[in-house]
Amino acid sequence: MTSLLLGPRSQPDVLGVAEWFGAMQAQDLNSVLWSLGARLPGTTLPEVVAATERGDVVRTWPMRGTVHLVPSADAHWMLELTGVRALAGAAKRREQIGLSGDDAERAVEILGSALAGGGRRTRSWCLAALREGGVEVSGQRGYHLLWFAAQRGVTAIAPNEGAEQTFVLLDDWAKKRNDPSREEALAILAHRYFRSHGPTTIKDFAGWTGLTVTDARAGVAAAGLTAVDVEGVAMWADPAVLDAGPVTGWWALPGFDEFLLGYKDRSMMATAEQLARVVPGGNGVFQSTLVRDGRVMATWKRTLGKTAVTVTVQPMAEFDLDDARAALEPFAAFVGLPLKFTVKNP
Figure 1 (tube, rainbow, N blue to C red):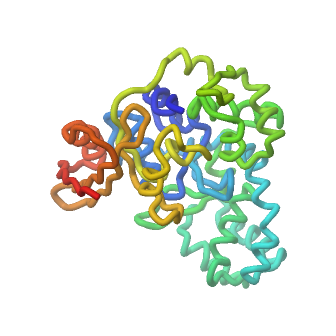
Figure 2: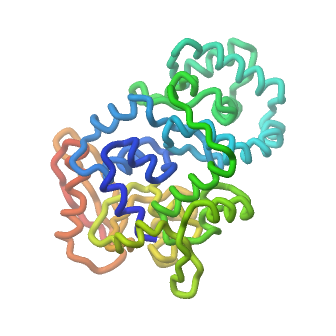
C-alpha cells in the first residue's frame, strides 16, 4: 500500500493526478487542493485552484455518497457504474426527511433549467431557486436535493465562488465525455485504483467503490493486474508500479486524503492506537498526517496568519523534528507563507 505516493509525482498537472487515482477524496475542499499540491511539487494554491477552473476535473458524488474529484470526462460513466448504488437508498432517506419522489424529480428539473446555457450558481442561489419552485429545502432537504441532482448526472460541483460552493450542469462542464462499456468501465476503475493504491485487496477495492465483490472481481480480472502475496494476504497491483519499488521519504498530507481513506484496512499505514488519534472519537473527521516511508508518524494542524502559517505537530513515534519541519516546508510554500513550526507532545 505504498505506490499511491510514488506515481502522482510523475504526473504533469491536476488532471494527470486525478486520472492516476481514478477519484480523490474531496468532501473537504482545502484537503483536496493540498492533496493535489502535494503530488505536484512546486505548485502553489492559486495555480491549483486555477487548474480546477479549466473544466477537465470536477467534484461530484461518484462513490459511496461521498464527494470525490474525478476527471470530468469520466464523471458520467462513474456515476452510472458506482454512483447508482447510492440512489437505491434515496427513497428511504427522503421519507426520513420529509420529501417525496415528486419533490426530488421537480428539483432536478428546476436545477437543470436554472443552470442551462453554461450557468454557474452558488449553493445558496440554487437552494433559493428550489424554494421559489415550490420545493422545501429546510433542514437536510436542500443537501439531499443537491446531491440527488448530481447523482443523476445532471449537475456537479464547480470551484468555489469565494467561500461558497457553486454548481453547474455536468454536460456543460464536461465538454468531453468518455463512454466505455460496463466491462471496460470496471477494468478502468480497477486499474486506476490498484495502480495508485496497490498492492491491496479486492475487499479494499469493493469498499472504495461501493461495488459488489462480484463486480470488483470482474474489474480486477479485466485490468491486467498482478497477484502478489503480502505477509500471507492475497493482493493485487499494477505490474508497472511494482517495478518502480517502494516509496521512501516524508510526506505532509491533509486529513481527507487517499493515503488513508482509500482503504478499509489501514493497518499497514498505522497502528490501531495511532489511527484512534488520527480520527479522534471515531467521528469520521481525519486529522492531517505526517508520513515517513509509508507509515504515519504524527498529526498536524495549521493556522493561516497574515505573515506566517503556524503548523503544530503532535508526534506519534520517534523521529527527527528537523525532518518533520522539512516535510512541511512544501505546504508553507504552497500557501505562500513562511512556516512557523511548533510541537505539541501528547
